[in-house]
Structure formats: structure tokens, C-alpha cells
Length: 141
Image 1 (tube, helix red, strand yellow):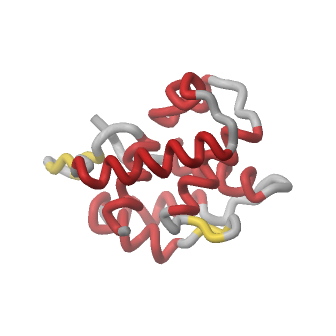
Image 2 (cartoon, rainbow, N blue to C red):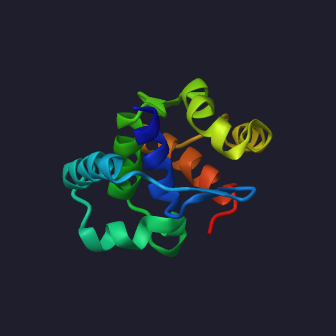
Image 3 (cartoon, rainbow, N blue to C red):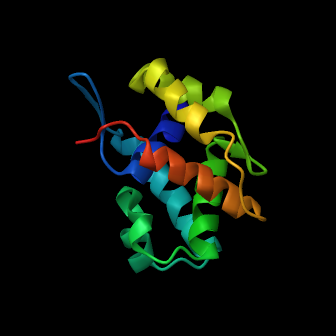
């Protein structure tokens, strides 16, 4: 599950993470499991494949973010354990991303994003925090 959780984060940032001179990519066997989660969540919230392509690479700022887009992020990030019932799981995120991007960088992001006040739904809560992580993400290739 560790690599899958990392894979979800990478796919949503949609480029390999770069940490110094190391580039991290998703193994093919984990990519298939991840794509299954993405497809399941996309269908669950009635998100078109076209919209999915528009919001990749943290480019959701270029579209009108409707509830189904927010709920898509909630579904996928919850399935890998980054959120439980809309509550961010910093220990899980630190365990997965800390060794890859460095705890100093991750702690900075977490300090900015984890305690954001949010909207009225679980989907709003997850999306607002995810959006903050996107805006403060690690440099990517």
C-alpha cells in the first residue's frame, strides 16, 4: 500500500518527483492498481475522462471545480489512506512522502495545508487540502 499511496500522490501531481538528482517513477504493476482506483472513483462521482485529463498535473485551477471533481479527489486519496472521513492522516503522508521529498519540505507543506479551514462537505475538505499541497508541491520534471 505504501507504493500505491505514493503513486496516487505522484499521479495527481502527474510528474515524477525530483529530490536532488533522484527521479521517482511508478512501477508498472502499481500503476495498474492505481489506474483501477482512479477508474472506480471517476465512475463513482460521474467524472468524464475528458475532465479527468483536464484536472491532471494539478491543473484543476484551469477548470470550474464542481463537486464531482472535489469528490473524485476525496475518493482516490481516501482509498490510499491519506484521508479518513475527510480527516488528513499526516502520519501516513509523512511515512510515504517524507523519505522521498524530505521531511523539511514535507513539514513546510503540512504546516501550510493540514489545518486549513474548509467548506461544508468532506469533498470540500479533502479538495482544499489537496489543492494546497498542489500549490506548494515539490519541484517536478
